[in-house]
Image 1 (cartoon, helix red, strand yellow):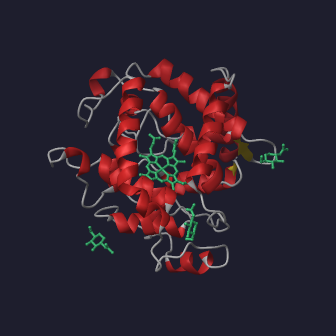
Image 2 (cartoon, protein in one colour):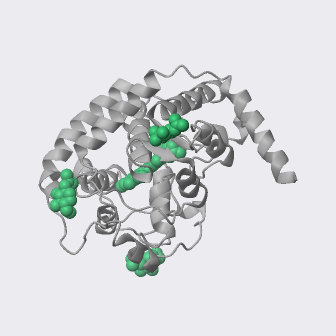
Length: 309
Ligand code: HEM
Ligand SMILES: *[C@@H]1O[C@H](CO)[C@@H](O)[C@H](O)[C@H]1NC(C)=O
Ligand SMILES: *[C@@H]1O[C@H](CO)[C@@H](O)[C@H](O)[C@H]1NC(C)=O
Ligand SMILES: *[C@@H]1O[C@H](CO)[C@@H](O)[C@H](O)[C@H]1NC(C)=O
């Protein structure tokens, strides 16, 4: 846990702390926003075709991994970072247009519902607050690092990122947290819905213990953690489970694993919402305790000993 004096000040405007206020704001903004964007959610750009198991290998061969970009040009999102590391989004992580982001997500078969909604949402959420009228102005382009802004989309209790107020860095994956998550796998090396709930509960208990400035309200529990768990188990993984292998590749290297392909079925809004709710439920039902830390430390020690030999 970081000393209070060492903490970086928040790079944010004042935080909205109460879950109910955020939910209300979210719902009002959501209605306005849907009205503005609904027409776009049902058409795709004809030039951009979702990639399949057949077309992906060729595409990824043309977009090779260029190494892990510096955290100053990256986001707390493993998927957006991966896209930039392969040059599918600009490798610089900077000056990304709305169309580039929507196209990238469409190629992963996440368009147009998810792609348009998330992209429009992001360009709207991070716009220059001085621009008027406030609620219809948008960013012209996005830098991935803008997504590091604490308590905007970025939130506490991430699977692999430390809380901003604990580490002063909410964007880099912490190797210990990556290891921690993998310790929830079953004997065949998969983390399923129930275990993803347990992993999140452990993170929550750790944050409650270590982070006096913890913000983890209903908004972040449901829309934040819930949707990220849904994406992890269905887009990085498949059918509500992710393999340790794929998890490690995506989170350690921020790289598409060789045997990964985009999901075959559109990740529609209905599917995202259902999986988000299931993730939220599995966290709510989890009986995980901090005692799990001892077991994780023991496994980590075992790995260290093996590596020394
Ligand atoms: C416009 C699209 C997207 C935006 C703006 C975005 C943004 C973000 C941000 C800001 C976070 C950090 C939240 C935190 O504090 O933990 C995050 C986390 C995450 N994102 Fe994305 N994301 C997008 C699309 C995707 C997609 C397509 C996937 C698919 C796999 C994905 C998977 C994840 C996962 C698994 C996490 C959780 C990481 C963790 O808990 O350690 N995201 N995303
Ligand atoms: C990628 O970003 C760099 C630096 O910001 C810029 O010069 C370049 O034009 C961008 N490329 C594309 C394809 O947008
Ligand atoms: C581990 O989880 C995966 C995904 O849910 C499942 O297919 C597999 O059968 C499980 N293995 C064991 C040993 O339970
Ligand atoms: C699924 O993908 C097809 C092809 O791009 C598109 O026409 C359709 O609207 C998508 N459906 C959803 C729910 O996103």
